[in-house]
Image (tube, rainbow, N blue to C red):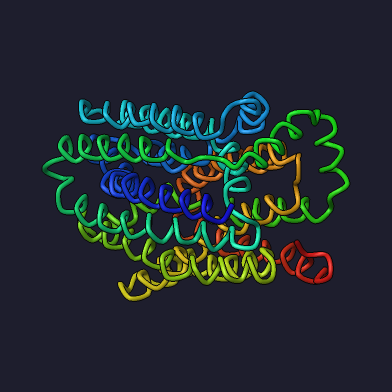
Length: 390
């Protein structure tokens, strides 16, 4: 099992590095490119919402794909999603770019519930969060490199950057297809298929801790996403940042994720996912706070760094939590979680864009900070249940 787990870890790292190089070249700049193509705040709102909104049907995807080979499913849908990246090379219209972005993330979302199950299957519980941290650190380094290249190329060589990103993404998924699940994990997957949706819902109703987790993360990420569609406009119009400077901020966020991933992974493996969630929520509050109170470059960089550390913690923590507590109900638990991701992913950026016309950017940032602080309450309650933390 350990040899197979290490083999799978090496394969996933290589695949993630290739995909990260391509993603870093394109994804951080899509909202800016939409503005360059004549787009509006609503276009940037849709782009900001796309990664999370695409999970709106995650519960359905989880049930429909429950019988599928997880590696093959991820290879098929994540590989196919790159077609929409390729098509970006042939457009100069903001509306088309937004549509392709949405379709790209929808394709990724279909296989996401299977990814959670795959992580549970291929990595041992005692080391799972640490192994996933290794993958994210490797991928994060690749994203930083890709973002650096994209920040210098994109304005003049958008088509070339897109074509390279497409090739790297396809190569990454080809490598990923070599991952193999242990036989014991396939038997567990067969047992999970026997569980009905009603049984999963009943298990969820009895799980008060998971309900608190859903509440805390929903409020936290809704608050964080509220001003997300306004940041590109704020950065270009108020701060006057160039492509390379915006790319630098994206690199700072990724580097913070790199530095904290291993720390979060160790805490989750040794103790629990809940302390990581609370610490991530504390750090996340700094992001809207510094944009609200200061436009000084150093403050913006510090807030961006805190946001990167926060995002890394939440990402590892929710998967670590669900993989420990859900058992054979993992498709439903992960599907419910990701569906909530979709709900807030749609509502928050659009509400933020609409409210900004009435109350202004500063007020949106103040609301974002205030509600982020409120999200601490469910995590504190969960942390008080020390003897029952997974």
